[in-house]
Amino acid sequence: MRAAAQGEKPAGDKKEKKEKAQKDPKPEKEVPPFFRSEAPLAMTLTTNIKQIRKDKGEDAPWRWAALTYDSAGKPAQMPVKIHTRGIWRLRNCTFPPIRLNFGDKATKNTLFDDLEHPKLVSYCKDNDSYEQYILQEYQLYRIYQLLTPVSHRVRLVKLAYVDSASQKQEAQRYAIIVEDPNQLASRNLSKIVKVKGAGPGDLEAKDLALAYLFEYLIGNLDFSFNGLHNTELLATMDGRMLPVAYDFDFSGAVNTSYATPPPDYGVPNVRTRKFMGYCELKDELPGALAVLQEKKEAIYALYHDEIGKLMHPDVVRETLGYFDDFYKDVRTPKDAQRNVFDRCIRRG
Image (cartoon, rainbow, N blue to C red):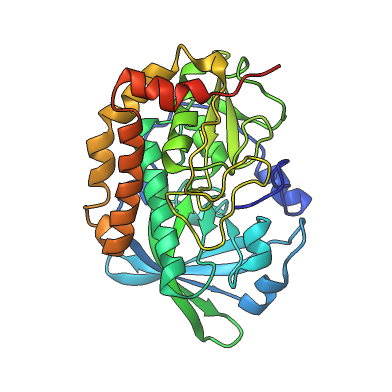
C-alpha cells in the first residue's frame, strides 16, 4: 500500500503499545491453529463501521469488534480490538485497512490462539475487480513463502462486514489475515529492527539478493529496505540481519487500477520491471535466481489449485504471462546477466 518512505507510525494508546512490546524470540513449538490450513475461512466482522471510517489519524484508537466463525459446526464469537492503519488505503478505500488485537486470554484453545496483532488486508472498493486484487496479492504472499521461511504467513478469509449500530451487512468479500511481524521475527529467532538506514552491507547478502529478485519477479517498486517502507528487517540472535517484504498491491503482477510507479524511477507504469538490487550483491544473484527457477513449477501451480480457481481466468492468464516474461529474460546465465544483473544499482 502506498505510504511515505519512512513507513507507518504505530497507532494506539500506551497500554496497547506495551502489549506490542517484542518478546525474547524462542523456537516455535507448533504453527498457530489459524495458519495450519490454507482453506478460505468464512467469518463475520461486526463493528461500528461508521465510527471506524472516521478514524483517519496516525494515533487511531482501538475499537471494539467481534469475529463470528464456525467452531465444531456451531457459530462462535471472538471479541477483538481493531484500529485503522496505513496511509494510501486509509485515505482512498471504502473500508479502511485495520490491525487486529487478539492479545486477550479468551483466545486460548480457539482458532485464534497465539495470533497476537495480525493485519487485516480488506477490500478497498466493494466490487469484483477489487476483490480480484485481494486474491492476486494473496498469491504473491504464497509465492514468497515458497521461496523463504522469512516471510509472513497469510490466510484467506471470506469476510462479511456487519455494522453493529444497524446490524446490517455492508459487504462480503475476500480478505487476507497477515501474520503479526513480531511472531514472524520470533519464529525466526530474531527481533524486528526499527531503525532505518540499513545498506546492503548490513543485511545477509544471500537473503537480500533473493528478496530483490522476488520483487523484480512481481514487478514491485513500492518498497525500501533502507527506509523500512513495506519491508521489515529482522536481527537474528546469531548476529545476522534478514529482509522481509510485504504489501504487494502496487506491483505489476497485481496491476491495480490505482497503482503508479514512483515518479523518479523512470518507468512508465507498474508493469515495467526495474531491478532495484545493488551491484554489491552480484556474487549472490545467480544463487538467488536458481531458487526462483527451481520453484517455477510450484509458483505456477498456485494459480491452478483451489485458491487459484477463485481468480478470474483472464487474471490468471495475464499474471502467468507476466511471469513468463521474467523467466524468458533469465533463461540462460548470459540472459540473466544482460537483462537483470547488469542493471543493478551502483552506489557512490
